[in-house]
Structures are given as structure tokens and as C-alpha cells.
Image: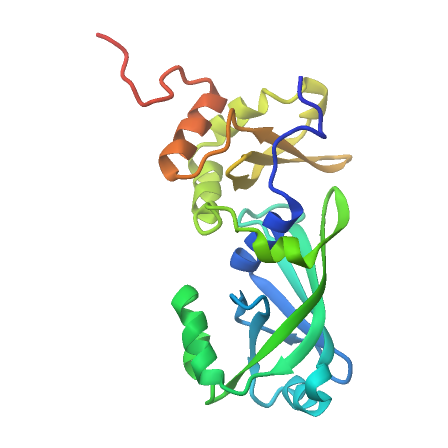
Length: 254
């Protein structure tokens, strides 16, 4: 039987990259002004995090005044579950570093838009400003605790291939296939599955379930037989977890 330490799962660096793709709440904090929400938070090819803020945000002026050394800053990412859970926060990511202004914001906005066509980028130079965060440290926290991860590991990692599809898959499981979730949950020891069982997360390594009980919530990872990389493999892996004998979509003989 697999132990908690050998269940296949994304690395912390992969989780950070995935959170950058799908986190729905990000806040930029610097000394000297109130925290500001950033609509765009993109890991650029040069290793900096590019963010958008209102042009009149005090952080913009402070970044220019800081000079080449940059302005110490922290970008906090919150990853919420797409399911209405009792505790919807799945993870928190803190990206720390030095904040710098951008000398060619429209050009950089066009580069970012090639990977992330966000409408906020259209307003750069008109009401929105770009800033870049040069990373010095990264910390990720979830229900298992907090962990520091090397910046270089984050820069070389890739987001999960299902980051953009996860919301739709989880909502589909929750709304239309609660029976499938319960069948998959049979893989959890009976003593550990007392409570309401909900889909929490989905990645190339497996499915995460949240168990909401009267004594508190806890999360369980159900690994796939092997990592998957596309929708066909994901569908097959889920059927295998359920116990469907036709994992390749074959039909029973008449």
C-alpha cells in the first residue's frame, strides 16, 4: 500500500507554476501603500513576474523612486476551489522580490498577451501600468503545511497540463457525477471517509478529495495508475479509478 510520502503528486515548484496560471486572487504588497489587487500575474520568459496595477497606484511611483535596486515587495496568490466548499482556499503562494518599473510597457504587454491574452493588457498606458517583480524567494502553503521552494526550480517547472480545464472537470464531477466521486472515495479507508466527500483538485497525477466532517476537514489524494497528459488519458484514468473495466472505451460484446 502506498504511504502518504510516496503518493505521486506535483512538485512544489509545479504547484507554484499552476497557481500562477489559475489563481483567482492576487495581491501586491509593498511598504508605504495599501495592498493592491493585480488582474494580471504572469511568469515571463526572463524569470520576472509581470503584474498589472492601476496607473495611479502608489506602488508605481515608489518603484520608480527606488531606482535600480528595486522596491521590496510580496505578491500573494490565493488558489480557491471552483467548488463551494466550507473552506474554499486550497493554497497560498508568496512570491517575494524586488519590484521594478517597466520602461517599455506597451511592448512588454504585447509579449505577455501572446501567452496570456488578458483584456487588462489592452489598457496598459491608458489606466493600467505594468510592473515586474524580480523573484528572490517563493513559499507555498496548503493544508499539509508551508514549504520554501528554490526560485530556479520555479523558473524551470511547468504548470499542470489541466490547469485551464480543472474548473470545468471538478464542477462536472460535483454537479453531475457525485456517484462517481463516492465510488472513487471507496479507495480511502472507511475510518477516514466519514463526512461529506467533495472533489477538491485535479492534476496529471491524480484526484484530490476534500472530506468535510463534524470534527474538521481533511484532504486525500487518490493517485492515477500513471501520470496523464491529455484529456483522453485523463478520462481513461478516471474510469480506471471508478473501476470501469472498459478503460479504453471498449464496448461489451453483445
